[in-house]
Image (cartoon, rainbow, N blue to C red; front, side, top):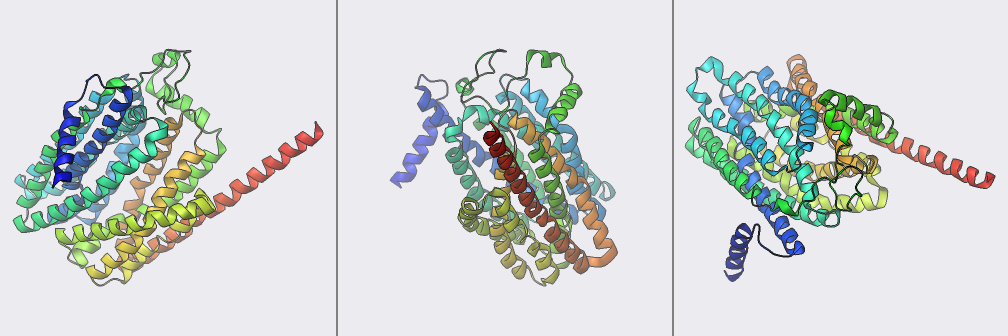
Length: 461
């Protein structure tokens, strides 16, 4: 009880200390703690609504095609908005209020979703698809903006510990919220349960924005003047040159691409990732349809499946970190990604939700390695200069596959039925994972050739 009271008093103090005359180190530590509080508020808002949009669509009478659109249409909007939005955010010297505005613009769509049952039956599913699609524009821009903002806030030396603490807390809180929300929706019933959940998600969004605004942005180094020396704690995205201020968005994009295509490791990794993401995302709408239409999952079961996946991931991280230290990023990425064919295979063979939940725990452990290795490999192949720009273009490229992959999954379902659609998806995932093994072989050969050439040059001189 004393420890709980101490934590509450610490939270209260952190929320009241913005703008005080504490030392720079104390203000930084406070900002790191507030960033964790922001993560908690964010996951509370998101997990009250996002996990249940798919099953809500099914209950509204959405067709298989509309379920596929719930995955592919938002990806198209993200593809079109992420880079221009990122450039817009990057031109703001102070990003906090801009990010908060985009978060609010995204989550107001949850309020609209809560009103959808008041419309006529023939309009409901399409309105949900349109809302889920449109909200992804401000969502993708808010995400890019938050990354740019937080990279300035937390110096490189503290990022690993700070973000690990935030992610662990969000993972645990998010799982609890999904469980509680799923049970609440089932108790209240359709459609009121969903309406309550979506409205509550918007209320927690207001809390999230308030907490975000408690971060002391005065600790953030603003972009230096052209020609000034860069700080070691400067943002990942370097300030644009003065000539760039006169360029339009599309001129900047053309200039970015001209530089990116010259960086071989990044291009090769991006191409391998596109193939992998295509195979990864193809069965996504099939999972929702199979859970709800074949296995008759309710919202509580959706929550339990999420819990099983999270439990597996918490166990898997330690295992895959050891493998990365031993074999490197790309080899570990292959070792983990080659196993994800198990997910569609399990669905094709499963006749009960309990069996799916068991496999979800296993695949959660596998996916922890995939997610960890994907991001670490990305950081490895991107140059230190313009790292944020490279990451934005990579994310846009892999998101492009999400436009087509879910519709391909629905097409496979229509052509072959659930069992063979899942088997084909499993085979696609298995084959695509070998792209990372092949890429690992290529990069080693290139590194060896460069080493031999360098030694030859030294011997010649």
